[in-house]
Length: 185
Ligand code: IMP
Ligand code: MG
Image 1 (spheres, rainbow, N blue to C red):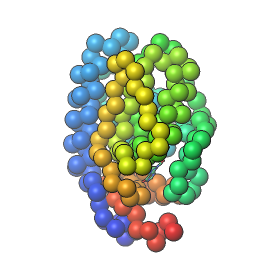
Image 2: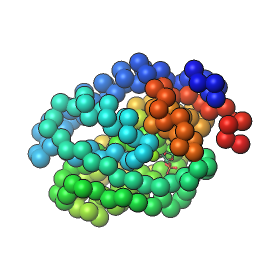
Image 3: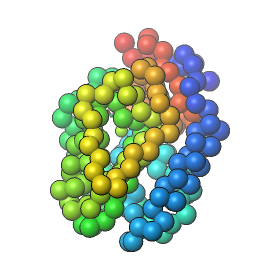
């Protein structure tokens, strides 16, 4: 375990097994979707999750990235995240699966989801690896067949690893753990 961590919450094996379950569920749910869905990862945090998830999806999907800036270098969420780079793929009339590392207050998810709908997506489902429901400020409204998938419910700790950072560090850890407070206070 990295010396800056207090504990490991999910090992790389546990993450990998959970992603296999999510991918099987999504592949089954979107089997009849035509054209197949577009997976859009929220950079940078979702880069590993997106890569591992799409490799287990058994459909001829499209993949793209979007960037939402929410934190700067602190641990306090920004209420008005900005979209700082846009999409390459045309998502008009496409079903989108938005891939996130973690849903915390929900501001980022709502902002990105609105943006994707403004670009003409016919639906925006969500697949987040972690979910901290106790910190939610904004609840995403799903409509029609839109789905919400989550890997693990995360307790209210600041976590790093497997894509998640503090001040752009720790993203490359293969597991997810709790950062010791002395390293961000
Ligand atoms: P939200 O807008 O408050 O839901 O925050 C979402 C974004 O904040 C995520 O996409 C992460 O990049 C970041 N974030 C939230 N909680 C954590 C955490 O515990 N560790 C690292 N990043 C986090
Ligand atoms: Mg993120």
